Image (cartoon, rainbow over the protein chains, first blue to last red):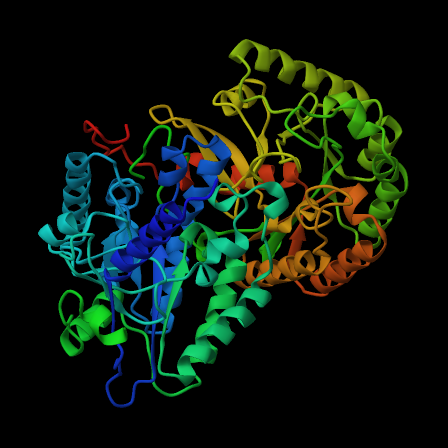
Length: 303
Length: 312
């Protein structure tokens, strides 16, 4: 039995859902770099070592695989960035301050940004506990490296992040370039520096990533990833765009991949106008030069 | 470290490239693991695993091709054998042992022991040691728990008791850990610093994950990526003066064009000066003498704090 009224209401519900969600996004149509800069490349490290494996109650050897990131991988990435004078952003769960404080202190001393990646790499469902986790992570990072984090890579509630002074998130891929995202009420606008799974090392190298099945493994060699990412960089470079390269120290800290990243960076540096800021530095540039135009600005402009 | 029970197994920072010492001033170490287990999943070796043409190839032609190739390049490997396959493989492993390869244990049936009680696991471990000692004529020094293609993760499975049981049983090393890319100590008790020497393994250098993985017929064939990974990791570790391990399965790498890729890789590797090829047991002896736990393990007490609503 078909009911025309019912079908129309279904469409209306979908249209309303699309519209209200879309209204949370505000894009920067006239984005431009300072004279002489053609692209910003953010190297970002998600430094959870074995912490998330532990949270998921994975096996001892899975935890050991994560431990590589803390014992070995993070140090190699810091050496690599240092050798190229790149300021990276280390997104770290606050708990890592109790497991790998030396590495975080060394990263901060090297001029890298230490940002939040959730207290224990997950967002609690209870709002009060979520607030507790944000505060704990923020304080742990501040007391370990002497500077309060202003960025996060998380799905944390915007109002809670804003309360703690966070100015940007680096999550999701709604646009190639920096953009603004509000919460469902149109409030608590945060700058977002997008990253895409296609520019994420774990997608190419890590077995069983995000619970993928054995028949769906994407483990490949570094040369293939080098060419894919180089093509991504060139495509964005031509149009004055942006690239956020997401690395996991337990994945990219392996010797063969450090070599590949070294070659990738060297190739990027053969072109003029490539800027390697930390996410915070890039976020402050965006917030200053292209501040949010307020709620509903995206809808008015683009419709 | 800051140590944390249930999270970390070793100290906060690995040895740097400059701290490593190899025998006779050699530049880096290469260890080749040949896994003779035919187990396809967590249950360990089953009747079905033994009754298929690929198994027959592995047991006969595959192992013979691989043995000949290693001999041509004078490579001594560590051959891992589940106790349940020791007699099936009897003449082969005796010949490999006589040719200078090490025979190491790969569990009772190469099964997942993570749910076993301490006593049940100890019983299987002791039986495995006895069976392999009888067949080889020498007690195994190394224990492996390599991943099987049907496992949910590509890292190998152990129980919370395995490392302690191996220490009790007198094994000198465990052959597959993932916390480092050089030998390292797996600490089982912080206070006493009781620890098991662990040799590094990584699935990106293990043939089975690239060759008709996860299963013959439906799996994907990425022999080129496997070769590229071997070369890239070996070259990078050679430059750093560290360690390279590759894990080979005769039924997989022994076939046709794959064997040629292995040959090409070994040619590339053996052309470079200063490569120390050693069996797991030789690596263990060198490491325990030159990087003893008392000297190289830099453990620091836990600074972890427990809170309501957080992990403990």
